[in-house]
Structure formats: C-alpha cells, structure tokens
Image (spheres, rainbow, N blue to C red):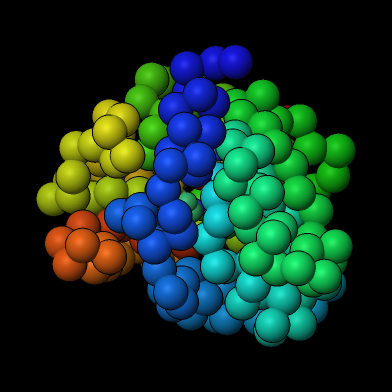
Length: 208
Ligand SMILES: C[S@@+](CC[C@H](N)C(=O)[O-])C[C@H]1O[C@@H](n2cnc3c(N)ncnc32)[C@H](O)[C@@H]1O
C-alpha cells in the first residue's frame, strides 16, 4: 500500500465524519457553482477525492442520475455507501489514486474540493491537468477548490500546494478556459477558518 493510501485509510479509520477539518454539512459553494452550469440530470459527474463528503447525497437529491465518486481510501467510500444506504447503488464508486485513474469514459463535470492541492510536484500536477482535459467532454466543466495562499500550509497533516485566484487558472490555462475564481472562507468543525480558492473552468477543444 502506498504511503498516501495508508495515510488516508488511517484518517477514515480513526476520525468520524464531523471530526475532519474539511467537513461541510452542506457543500453549498460547490452546489451553487454546479447549479450555474444547468447540466442535464443525466450528466456524467465525478467527484475526485470525494471521501465521505455529502456532495453526492445532494447531487442525488437534486435528481442527478450519473454520479461517480473516486477516492484513494476504501474506508471513506465504505462510509459514504453506508450513509447513503439503498441510494448508494445509484452511484459509481471507485477506489483509486487519482494519479493512476484511467476512466473508460468522458465526464461532463469534474469536481475536486481539496484533493488536487495534495499533488505538490510538477509532474503529478501536469499528469492531473492532462487527465482532466482528456476525460472531460469538449465543453465539460471543472470545479476545483484548493487552499489559498492565505490558507493552511498543510491539510490532514500533509503538505499542500496553495494557489491564488490567479495562479490556479494560470496553471490550467493551456487546457481550460476560466469561468470564475473566488476565495471562500471555510469554517471547520473546530471553529477555525480556512481560506479556499474555488475556480470553475470549461474544457478547451483538444489540441491536436
Ligand atoms: C481534504 S479531503 C476532502 C474530501 C472531500 N473532497 C470534501 O470536500 O469533503 C481529501 C480527500 O481526498 C482523498 N485523496 C487524497 N489524495 C488522493 C489521491 N491521490 N487520489 C484520490 N483521492 C485522494 C482523501 O482520501 C480525502 O477523502
């Protein structure tokens, strides 16, 4: 098992849903951005590093029928499935390190809150960028959220790459058209504040 996977399995074995800093009772910011895209209910949506986030619950409640959750931790996925009960069968679940992900399909929406920022070397960042570009449909959308430059330097004890409202779209500019970037404060369950950047993007046509 990779160190990365071991770390996250341990987190989800030892901490409950509301005991992790990234917990949100309602993922309001992501949901409000997704709403703006006016996607059809059968749009193929993937939540990268979804963990046991409640985003999937809300997407199902809104009537989306083609939702995938990917996470490196099997424990996180197990917990999300347990929480959803019978509704879990409406979701595709993938236990994988995103860096090794080879989707056999294209997505209409790629959502990632607080996973990409763990990729701190340029090679993995480049691989991620090319993967999203390749596996999003030509007009597909991406919602990406990371710690901002005013945010913590670590998340779950691991170092992260912080971004600004400028540096995040600059990194993705080759393959994605920026729609909007903004900074959002997240209040953790421990009543501390973490500064996040949220960016939405539209995929550019493939470069031949
Ligand atoms: C900070 S948590 C955020 C969870 C969720 N996105 C949310 O907003 O509540 C990061 C998540 O990414 C997952 N993760 C970390 N590195 C990953 C990787 N390389 N591939 C897939 N998932 C990863 C972790 O297991 C964890 O669930």
